[in-house]
Image (cartoon, rainbow, N blue to C red; front, side, top):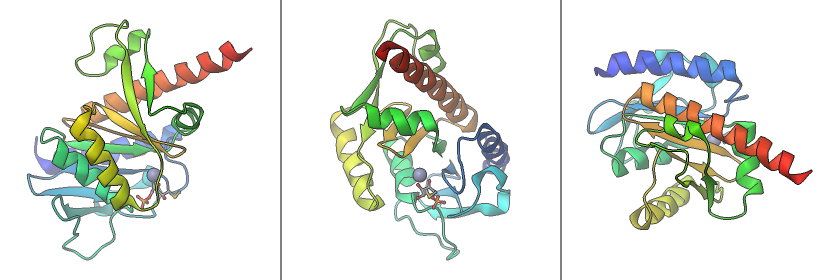
Length: 204
Ligand SMILES: CSC[C@@H](O)[C@@H](O)C(=O)COP(=O)(O)O
Ligand SMILES: [Zn+2]
């Protein structure tokens, strides 16, 4: 699909994310692939629930450089990493939800395993609630280049699918286009909400 149509769909998705309360204050960042060399990334420090097309900045996927000199997301290196790792990825969504923030802290291991939920099938290629679906958790890091290198190294040994959690921070997920990235975000967030409630109820 043409990049400008994808961008319009991404802007609508940002507004939907904002209305859901999934990108509070200036949290979160979003992007679409423009072509093999560039992506369009949200500007840093803005309320992502009220972005317009003019708030997206062209960035070179190989170098993280913005030819315009404008300042894209502080987490640019995570978006470009995904476009480099997955040539089929067409859109990346990063959100700061309560469920992803809390669950990624409560779960001390390096993955959140989802199992037993029909809604696992909202993730492309999943066919049964019986499969164990691990979502990788990486310890948070303020040095984003270092964090990106850690994730890149992990991905050489273990397949990453759909998205990953940053501990105490949020979810980054992707899809072949904006619609699929949004479906993965909504599906994962539903599963996180279930898991959060399950863990709370099972404690009592
Ligand atoms: C509310 S501060 C959050 C930021 O540090 C970061 O995690 C974030 O998601 C937004 O950064 P941004 O540079 O606006 O894309
Ligand atoms: Zn963030």
